[in-house]
Length: 170
Image 1 (cartoon, rainbow, N blue to C red):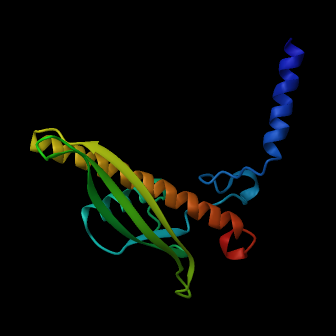
Image 2 (tube, helix red, strand yellow):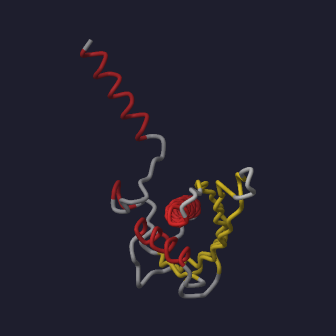
């Protein structure tokens, strides 16, 4: 039984090492050829609350990179729509939609090297108490900003993985 367990662990190790897995957050691991997000600086187009929350979520995940080879320019667009309307014609649930376009710009040349668009939705309930509604919306804004930042990072990681053979991305 112990021999079978050891053989399964050995086979799983060999399979996982051959799959091409590259950790995004450990650029020096496995010979230094992993995807690194440390060469990207976040720049927002406006200074609203959702802009701050999105920039903060991205910086939490990527770091605050002052002298980077790329600038990530983001233009978020937040909208709120009524989802559930009661018999008294008052909304009881809302959808908070964050649509965010982004561009990855090379710092040296100013050229846009990658462009994308992501979208996330967070639904929240609106209690009768106005303070409860404000709190629920604040929580939904934080959740939707975190979701959009995760989707942007996934798209950037995919882009960097497809272009990692270029010397400037290593």
